Amino acid sequence: MSAADDPREYDLDALRRRLLPERAGERSTSIPELAGADQHLCAIALALPDGSVRSSADGTKRFSIQSAVKPFLFALALADTDGGALDRLGIEPTGEAFDAIKLESGTGRPPNPMVNAGAILTCALVDGDGPEERAARIVTGLSAFAGRALQVDDDVSRSEHLLGDRNHALAHLMRDEGTLEATADDAVAVYARACAVLVDAEILAVMGATLAMGGVNPVTGERVVSARIARDVVAVMATCGVYDGSGRWMRAVGVPAKSSVSGAIVMSAPGTLGAAIVSPPLDELGTSVRGRIGAEALSADLGLHLFG
Ligand code: GLU
Image 1 (cartoon, helix red, strand yellow):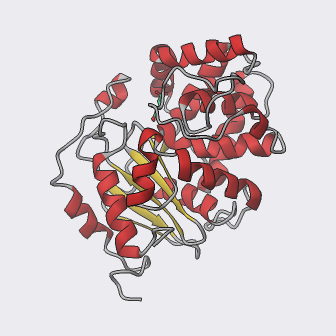
Image 2 (cartoon, rainbow, N blue to C red):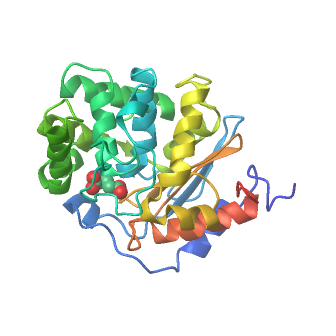
């Protein structure tokens, strides 16, 4: 293995310099905090099986996790329901946008845990009596994936809750179908807090690595979820993690990943490493433009493609 393809030596700042001139894409305008995000932010981080974490410049700049939280919410819901969450959610790709107002036909279940309907439901399936307890359980669970105590950005959480009309619509639809037991407002409030958890590229890479390493955080050594749960989550990331771009992602990058409107992408290369790339300008599918280009380069340079 040479420095060029060894993740312990790979030049992350050189990759960042290749990405910076890329000017395509627009920041999300869904909430003021994302509309005002630093569009020059660009960071790449790797978390390796030996517990080492490496990042480019900007690797410790913080942003809200947004939908990159969804694989971890699914993992926590699976853990807290002894796998029962699998009966409450579909796991098929939708070919539609992240916030499509659509449930599985015939069952009224969310199509999968990587779209908004599914994530709103997984938030409602974690342990806790009421929204505050569930939100606290989620932050504690995410912190175990990260290996450090995470915080919520209250302004982002408030904006998500107030302005997430499509999420309220999805929650009401699930109530009507009998799929969601919590009230629609409580369910959206918990989901809004989960999306507002603050991370940086290094933290997100460790979270991705915990799934890639069968549920054991490589930095702390803590088993966060069972190997079976980690496998199930990574499998669904592979098929549904990049929304209606999941097929193209799998062909071009070949690493299970989850995109988000903050421009963060978390990647879990099974048994190999966790990675994160963040840069706020998004393409029309809600995927970071620099993130997508960077992930393709990282996968090619480090030989990460699952079918390579
Ligand atoms: N909080 C965002 C929403 O619910 C998350 C979407 C995403 O990151 O793709 O609209």
